Amino acid sequence: MLLRHEYGPDRVGLSIYLAGQLFDATGDLLWLAGGRPPTPAELFDRFLGWAAPRLSGTTRPRVSHADGRNPAPLDTRSTIMDVRDAARLWADAWTQGWPARDVARIVDRQAEDGDHWASMFRPYRGRAGLRAYVEECFGEETRPAEVWFGEPRVDGDTAAIEYWAVTYPYDEPVTISGCTVVRFDADGLVTESRDYSHSTEGRFLPPTSLFP
Image (cartoon, rainbow, N blue to C red):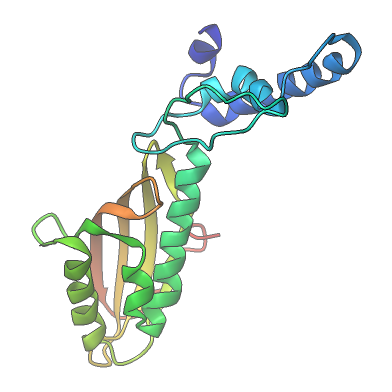
């Protein structure tokens, strides 16, 4: 618990420290362990598993022990990397799908009953709602959009992703800068996305420091 207090919200730093302890302990076991040494799964749980962020609705895989014992039930949990990977897949779907006007690629990242808020005053309910919204937007665009997405900022089951886009509705350039807050389920699909954006007429490229 002192480590929790020392590292605070820096779960990455805590995990790096614990991984070092795990490495040292594994080396010591090669010399000192008598009888059956701990399995890799048991070592992970002792040194790293307890510090993993918890995420409702996800389950770690059950591991079969070499001696045939059934593993004890595990708590439901996930790691921050699971959500980060899901957020990167979501951002990639928009990065590739927006210029190509590939509706299916974007909608496939949405849970069947996941909601998309184009703004806090424009909710689109479920996958069907998101499809209708994207089709409406793409129907106005007469040239491929130019799109940039940043690295996700992750907290629990939620990620915030900044983006920048130059779109061409009816062949007139409009630049959009925004950020979407996205919540994911256990399958890495979007249960809720809330978009906050500003737009201006004309074509403006993002600052070079925004998406390095």
